[in-house]
Amino acid sequence: MTGGYVFDTEAILAYLYNEPGHETVAALLDEVFSEESPGAISETNASEVFYLVARFEGVEDAPTAVSLREADRDVRALDRQGVTIEPADWRLAAEVKSHGRISLADAYAVALAHERDATLVVGGDDDFEDLPVAVDVCRFREHGV
Image (cartoon, rainbow, N blue to C red; front, side, top):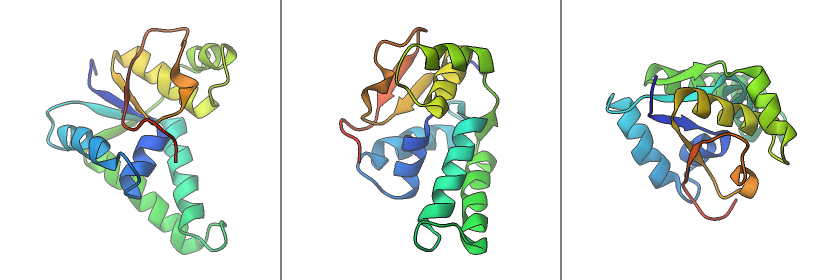
């Protein structure tokens, strides 16, 4: 994959839960779903989406059998529609993580976007400033939720 988009966890959650900025993410995902642009999410970010959806849809912030199935369904639906779940270079992700306060999952998203020469779709976090690798960043909202 060259170009296209890599989605971080915050972008996918905004899309799934109609959070502020979800319209921008939806427009980019529509490009992926219609095969106009390639799209991906790192395995680490897919895992993060999975466990967060399972908790959000569970009971008292704890997953249930039903919420785990819902989380699985949501992640697999994205994959079926063209958002591929891909590994990222663990060493590059560690290098990105070592340079700042970025989360490990976000470091994997940065690594995958860098490897694929893709635009990284992120929320309002300032974690994506001063990255040690060149990545085009698209912020779908100005502030976190």
